[in-house]
Image (cartoon, rainbow, N blue to C red; front, side, top):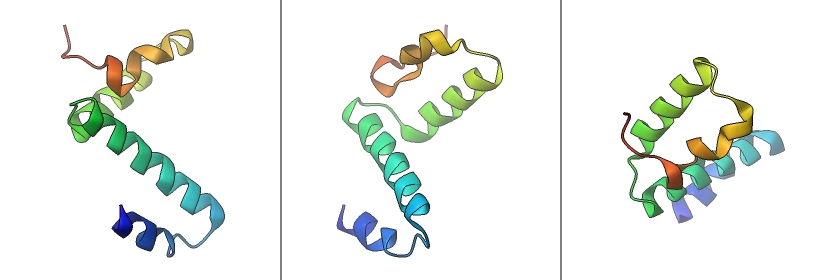
Length: 69
């Protein structure tokens, strides 16, 4: 992840760096869980837009991601 650390130098602001780190963490978690990051992100954002209940947020995490039924 050396490239990510190098890119974080150009985030422009501490908040930008933190946001970049969060996204990188989610992408790596997807990869560790054997999930394609783009597919997971797309499905997760669609679920949130459709009103996925906040009380069931764990269902949207990469390790719980499965193909749609």
